[in-house]
Length: 182
Image 1 (tube, helix red, strand yellow):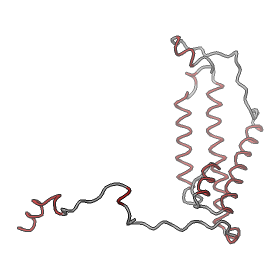
Image 2 (cartoon, helix red, strand yellow; image 1 turned 135 degrees about the vertical axis):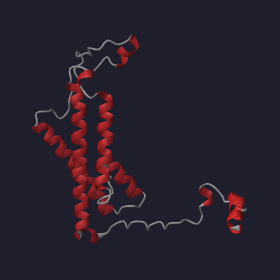
Image 3 (cartoon, rainbow, N blue to C red; image 1 turned 120 degrees about the vertical axis):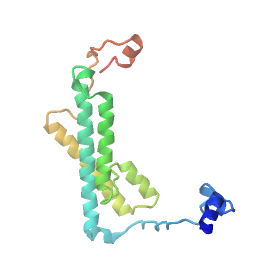
Image 4 (spheres, helix red, strand yellow; image 1 turned 60 degrees about the vertical axis):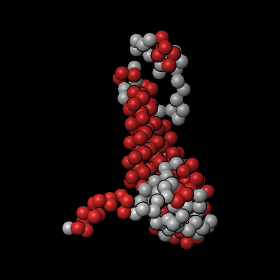
């Protein structure tokens, strides 16, 4: 019992030397940094995980664009802002899709979804050139499939806003300038 009481009494002063705080104090890492990815790895082309990761990036990019762009188009086509999910619904659609798709594809391909993210990881030498180019091609093909699906559904590839259409809301003069175009 005496030892336990002594430990309680000493408390935080049990280790009198100061523990450094901050990133400069982390000279001894508790993890090992993986080696940089090789620039070109021809063996990747014959592995199933390489192709599976590309398919995951293709599907994730397609689903992200399809759901989020249709959410925005639904808000724009609504007769007024009260009849749609609104700006908050658009934000939830984007955030929810990123969350779900990165969660689903992180273990397969890293969950990049965006060619800019893939390019950044290539510059940081976390991806080989072979894998980075393949991911970017598959992401662009997913975006092209999204545009093709939209055109087949009767939506134009590029929607031009109608400047004559106005909001039907009653708002103060300050907010009318912000919400003048729906």
